[in-house]
Length: 338
Image 1 (cartoon, helix red, strand yellow):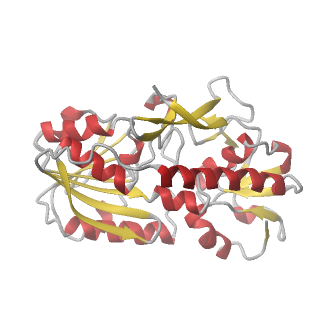
Image 2: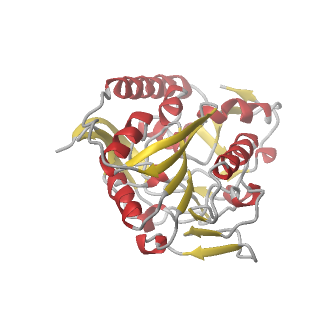
């Protein structure tokens, strides 16, 4: 039985842009509930993958991500794998920065990189059977997309995976800087305590951990004996941080509704503000650095997207992109921010 903590009234099934000028019947904004169940903070309902991942939407790579990918590739290298199976690495950003030549496989629903002599790219939905004879599995910002982490870690162990090397978003820090951590792509609040809890329960251990700013946490997990020493852990602090985040969203909407402005980022923050009462009429458009998101329409909305260079100089722009906010503002010096 899940206890509801918070409600989000207009959460999109998929965070993507659409080429059609009118909203299609398949585009749905639904109510989502942030719940507690078995000491886990998670989002309901769970949406089928085929409705969530309609396209590759993390193609643009700013300085924060460039540095992340460089450091995570080095973190992987420090484990000295003989070959790598990477899940959801379709952009190739980790593979390209790995300086040693070893056999590398990438599995992704929407890969943008192609196979070559050192790389095998599988364009398909992930299945546990893909992991046969994969001693080292790598995943950057994939683990938080899973709804059932316990099952996943047990299956990896069943398939004789020895090393699981991941980068996950630092979700509590995201929330502290007022960036949404939970949506249909991230259905569970994955924290350091939660990772330790999962490892003890499923027979893994944290060998190494590294923080990247307040953006991400790198983990090297190895198989170990089940300890069952951590049956519960306190989530009071997590709930407090979530409460502060939703207070910020509500207060921010009260301020923003006085203006007409452009919103930076074809991403989930916009939908959180709309769910809290911001009107689409306040938004002149969305601007985004990713060319694939420009000159389109936001999923489920009558709001259109633009290249930042295409809006008038001196425009009022709202940038609420958490750990990316300062970086974005530095690249838009000709506009006014609210």
